[in-house]
Image (cartoon, rainbow, N blue to C red; front, side):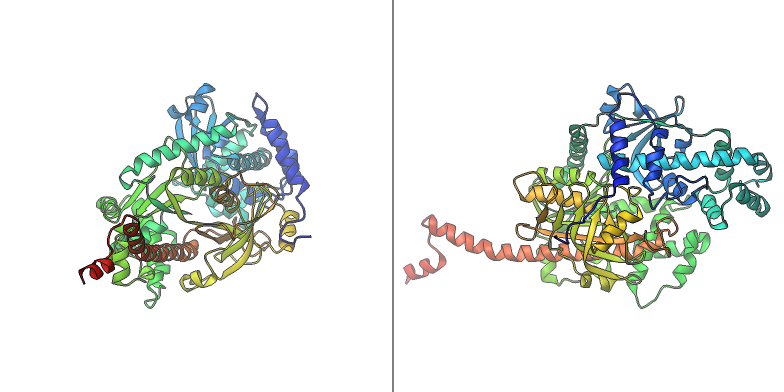
Length: 609
């Protein structure tokens, strides 16, 4: 038996998937309540108390962060790929109130009058993400409803709350006893709903339980493709001056802040303003972190400035000219941002390699001499970065970009993952990926090794030569499922690598990606393939989990260490490409001259003699 392939699939998870997809084929909305039994039977690691009367606060918090606040007031949720899909069904969603989830990038609109929530979905992964989140939220919300109805505590909470909505310690203890939770879980609830939101949501839960219905519009594959084509059309229009369809690309899937910060250099320009802001406001307790930075390690200062500049910009007292100055700097160094509110919520960035200014680069990127920079200023290449999409959306987006552009020079994927043997903040570099969507095992040469990342990582550890598994959703895992993969040597669990590799396969081979095969991309890959994951969750370990450890500033170390490695690789590859082409072009010119009967310099010298 080939030990590269996992040996089993979890029957409870498969049953849950089959159940909600079969029900969603109905022409009428289905009740979320009809999925609660199979959801609980799955024994998800994120929602292991689903079938208990006890409140599962971790699952409530996790799901609440991934749905909008208005879900507690929703009676019907409608999912579709783009505006015209909703319009065909009679929903004018663009006229509704835009709403957002705190931990998911997704276009959402709410009809407050009719209590209808519209969610734009870019692939089946959005359905695999949304459905379990909604089921989990409804189960735990209704547990809250029952406990609060029995205790009749909310009226007393409202009377005791202070002017800013916070509760005194004695009332918090009474609430803890009424909900029958421990102090840590009560703290999580207070963090989820700070200030007056806690009492407001508890009163809402006491007054009414949830019975959400859901339906999917336009669920055909062509609808997903059309939405991506519309997204690309807007990207191409926004990057028309860069001639994005006619120039070679380095494709990057990461985030919207790290690459531009490393290239733009503006965070360093505002070091004094950032220090004053931290001393005055101390957001997230970061003033103490700032004082602990080492004067001997400039990279720590860089990471810190990159993170805190965003906090400064979001603050009401931020100097108004900072945003304009940052935009001017980005134009100067050839950075274009494309984000269109009428299509997929995936921002794209185009970086013109020839316009990168070494004077603004992060110190960790200062690796080239004057001759190399002279070459880079002649480059025709672009770096195309997208805010990492969710699951199968990665396949659709990469397929569209690789089809519509002139040439791919490299594909570099950065993203969060769960680790089965490391700690939060560690970095994993796989060269084998098992994809739950296609059930393929992809073998490839990862262009990164531990040595490419480790010098820039201050706190975590880098593991290369790892095996990753791409799952269909965060809820769609349980301990039996994870132990199967762990026993097979898989230590890296994430959601995008498999779909990206399926897209890369179709970019290399003249056919659709296969299914249930071992796919070797070692031989025919004509460009770099680089995958790096940083750990945000340890689902088997009890020490740290995604539900208890914020990645916020803690995640900056791994985010920028991996981003530095990617940019160093891209710029080095581009220097090598330009040097190679510089050598090849004179040879090609001489051969062309010979074929055309023209005299080479050598022949001319001989004739003159």
